[in-house]
Image 1 (cartoon, rainbow, N blue to C red):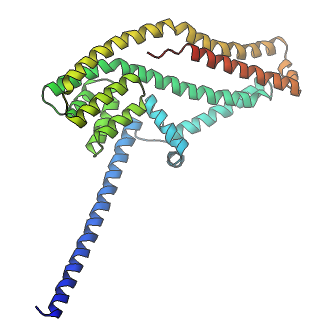
Image 2: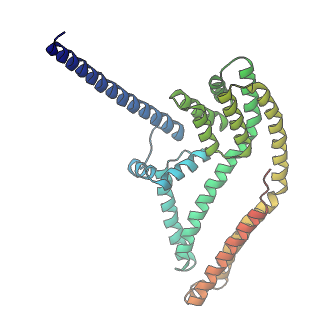
Image 3: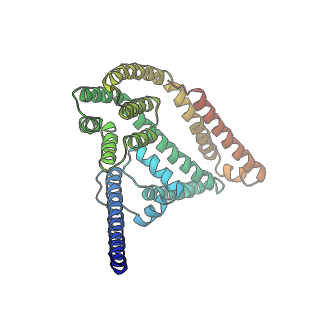
Length: 313
């Protein structure tokens, strides 16, 4: 084989390799784009719960790109509410503006910003309460979930198939959350990542134990049936214990919310007894400082009562 033939052959092989490399990169990029589009569609479908039309698309897209927007999105997803971060932000701003005007009109101009801040705090507390209620409901479903997974794996089904079966049989929120996990597994997410996101959305000790058991069994290939059945009995006992503790602390929790309500009610009572009293009181720096200190003390009392009544089971 002469030198010209070798040069021609080498050049042809190099060109063929480059062409195959370009085709491979193009196929890889197209596959990643299709996968990202599918993940976004499944995620959006899970978040809006089948809603056909959303509002404030531009604001919602911009919020999702920020760290605060992503944290808000995660919190809204944990609450199960049919609302996007953009919609929640607009509704919150409208509520704050309304409370600001009502506080100025009914009490005094000084109370407008305070009423707006109280609106933000109330909205965030509502999300926290809604999220905690969803977590409690999910925890109550964990024994049945563990039982379904144990029976399915005992029958020879794979863990991925067992999760899909549990998503179909269980009601919300367990059914919705497991359906989201099944969708993530279907588009290529690992079992560790999908279950880890579930534990992040609905944080609780019981769910962490269940997720750890499933992840370790899936990773090491161990016997998951016995572990799940033992875990089912433990979750049933913890469910009853949590119910008793929640019943015992219900009065204390109501006291924590009654303290700030009484403080705000006293302002309306004072202004009702003598019209314009609050406006005259907040007309000086001393009166404004006293009002701020009073609200701060009410907030400290609320936090302390909540902290003292918190018992981790």
